[in-house]
Image (cartoon, rainbow, N blue to C red; front, side):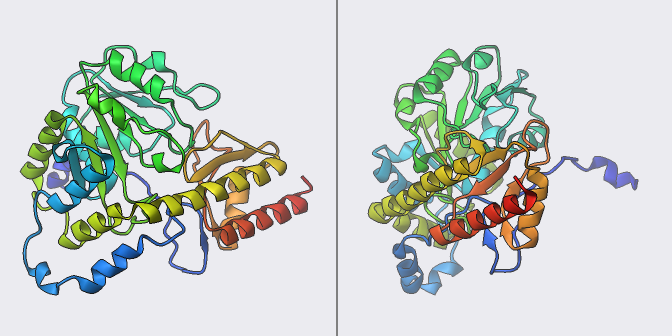
Length: 355
């Protein structure tokens, strides 16, 4: 090792889902929305004055923040925006988790949480899910430096009820509780109303899933003004201009198109429920997903081999070669046509395997 390499910050990085270069594959591995974003986005791009690009963007992202606040019926000072929910969550780890006590989150959840903890030198402890991949609230009723809950959880898709979230928040008012709601718009109940009651609760959402904006990178947090102010202080100490002007304009326009948003999410939910029935008929088991994916396994079927066979034939799903979940595949919900192709492939594969 060269002498200067000894000073590098060493972290095991997060591994994102594969992004295949072939546009003709059926991509069901990264939980993207199969439908385009609101037509309002195209209108913004057509009408945007290129001269805006020579100036720095609004560091407060006021237009976008105000649109989010209006949509959810809250004050703008309760909204923080960032470059995707990963940016918002990473900023929250850096801002709120600086004490000696461990931050708590499940042992099976979004795998970026432990990466941020390691990156920012945050002590943490993972708490086991029960046999049905559900959080055990009692595991979070002990001294801690913060709590992070993905709801619905990733990669399982299981929802924790708002009542149980409130139990956890109420019992931990000396630390910040973050509820990561990346998938909440696909049938789950948001914890947002609880932020009016508990000052220590931060709810984080994203444009990447339900608003089909994964390529634009917009995330946001909602909570008490004291939490939002703290996030802004840290952000402005690192990079005041995190949001680009096109992102601000696009995000504000898309947020205002409630009708398209509701139509798009309803289509994903309907397809998900149909695919659940068909997978169940094929012998797969899974939790009651409230997300835009299904986390499924089948007794007697090697998940890794099925994953590899599908990938070789241009159907991408997600496989996690980790203890406790290596028998499962996470299947993003695509269009009806894409899901029919996926199901047809699985039926043929199982027939060839004689199972």
